[in-house]
Length: 225
Length: 225
DNA sequence: AAAAATATTTAGATTAGTCTAAAAATTAAT
DNA sequence: ATTAATTTTTAGACTAATCTAAATATTTTT
Ligand SMILES: [Mn+2]
Ligand SMILES: [Mn+2]
Ligand SMILES: [Mn+2]
Ligand SMILES: [Mn+2]
Image (tube, rainbow over all chains, first blue to last red; front, side, top):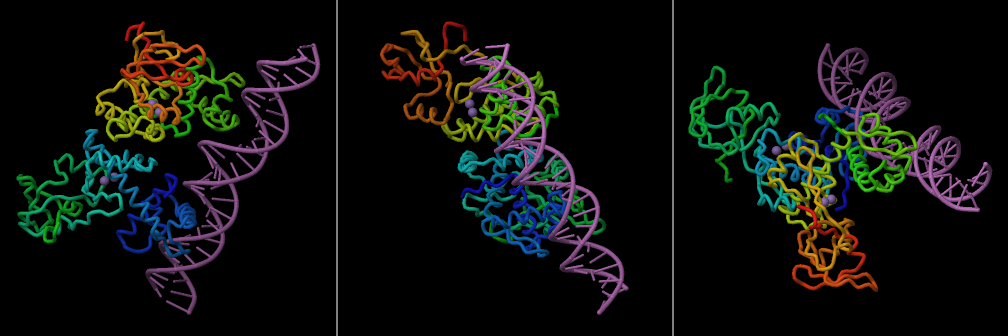
């Protein structure tokens, strides 16, 4: 398990993982370039390099998928990222909308033992401050069932478990409105005209626009956990 | 204060700081190359770059010194390094001989606020696990007076405050012998034959070789603090 | 099925940091 | 004060990662 990948290679693996989860198929050069804010030609170069290291499977013009090893590495970086986010929020008093950029750097620190020590110190959290599941030592993570707030049935008791849009702008917006992971939520009225929702959030009646409702995940309590 | 130096540039500044403190004069190209385990020619290149950024003062064949800004930056990286070391030992249950390499990476994480948050979380420690002083927010640090154990007067009560050799080998040795920062120490007999010392360390009589005595700093209690 | 549009790859340049070998400057020894 | 040894700089090459522009391939539209 002596990987020793560069900062850049690790970011490519993470990006491929994240994009392939959405579409559940090979990731295109252009999509990857978009995600990493670089040029398609640069992506081609790097994919070749990762393929040489057996971290991805790649055939010209066919897109790229993670190999078994590549996926394992990607997951371990995601684990590192999310644990650091928990640390920053729980112990360094950052808000959940402030931690992503710092975690982007911390996730690349190389050590055989660091992340497991951090995990223990944090008492093995299972979700990060944005509600995303944290893989354990072996790469397993909760796949709790969730749905968009916009799809939640009326009068169904639920709670906020994550965000679809994790841009700084959106997180800041939520923060201003006092909306956070773990908040209880129930839709009491759906306005058909503008698709806005009247909800009870932590016992307060609040209006939620369609745009927001489409970017908030809530727990789907029809299914266990 | 928008520095944005590379990992490498930061390491050069740290190395220049550390070498210039020892000799208290301009640092030679060769010494720097030795410290950074690189070639003199590479050092010349990098020094030029740092001089262009006004981080060092440099004239051909004359060695290099830190500018005011360069020194400030160097100190802030040292602050970061030492605070992370405290974190790793105090909260992630590492031993003091295990933390240096990880801190070498963590010290370079860029954030306006991270280190001050960490400092507060750690409750503003003034020394790191190796007994080295931690600069505060403004770059001030304790300059407690210390001397080598080999120079300590007989029967003088003192305590261990640091190491001169901070190689892994030496730290591991100390760890095995149960010698750590803060331990009380008193020399009861100096053997003239091999320059070994008989000392009382934490109320136990122990034999210390010259080699070890020359690499352990003890508090010089003749002077205040 | 050909043309047009889009996606991807190739070719060649660029930058940061490093390296080796050779040249020049400085310092030490005779 | 020459010569010799050492230190430092220059010159040129190399790798990783990126970029622009041009060349191919693929997909979509007609
Ligand atoms: Mn994040
Ligand atoms: Mn997150
Ligand atoms: Mn250290
Ligand atoms: Mn230290």
